[in-house]
Image (cartoon, one colour):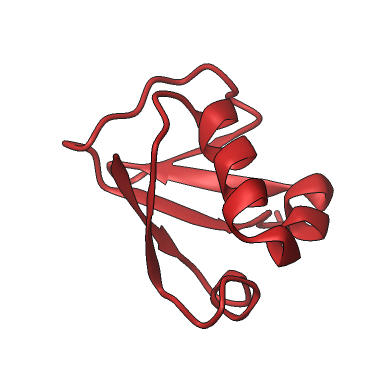
Length: 81
């Protein structure tokens, strides 16, 4: 199990929780499990989310390995330039 900190509006979609436990070993499994556990997150996940793993932000890095030793933050896609 990994602990995932939900950022911003994602908290509201996960019943107000700011940290959730998820059984996953990579980014894709994390998203799949979050959609099962919190169906309200599904539309946002389909629109796009970013993963901050130990302070490095990833987008669409489906098979990036994660473990319980990582600091994991999930956030809506960040846009801008």
